[in-house]
Image (cartoon, rainbow, N blue to C red):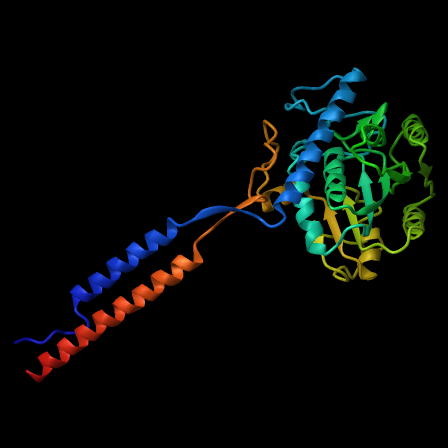
Length: 357
């Protein structure tokens, strides 16, 4: 009788292959949607952000500020003008629209948890008028985790930000304070613009920003050049002790001075170069969250770009992820090994018997 050309028969290989494919299909179908880490905190922060957005929209309506339904298609009231007296530079409208997603607060919670900050820890925060929605998302995450923010704001805004002279970001912050949504507020403000000293703004524009700072009853930084402004900001932050974290939202003059710094979570001492606030605190051993390059951040963490309509709170990969059953995979693997052993044992024994013949 003719011997087989291999120790394992075609039939045995077919049986093993078929069983393996079936087991793979079973495991793939075991995929379930589960909540990500810190789900409750993420959801609470996003809900607070959404509630704050509604309060801002009411304030915009009460001031009879017209909403441009072409450039602000979701009618959030958080998208400003293309040009105004306090517009400091060009701005990306898509990035501003992307930032109006309240689920950004969930991303900030994720970053905050990665830094290891705990309840009542002090955090230094640098805000900018260019991204009012993102400012609110960050503060919502901070409040959700019961942190103590020390906030310095650069009031001027790029295109499509908080650049209504009668309703700057400081005014928005005051509205949210009166609504008892936040119990903290900016402690000092710079004017914004080039070098954060108002360069590039008209005298009238600088006066409007000064008026905004004055009606908010906030300390004005002043300064003759960017180095002075950075030094003053550091001095004010240091008045409140040592922080566990530094957060920058959209502010690039004093925060990024002298260095190209990526967005997202930055580990302590990761930044070696630069003279700005991020470099200063990073070199001091303080972790940093840098909220710039918003569209790239959104793409990286599954948030839609310039969404219409605004996404619902609690949706997306920041809240849920798909996982496969590890226990089922182990059981199927054990069963497969048993079947493999039996088939191979039988097949080899059969082959040896046939060889003797």
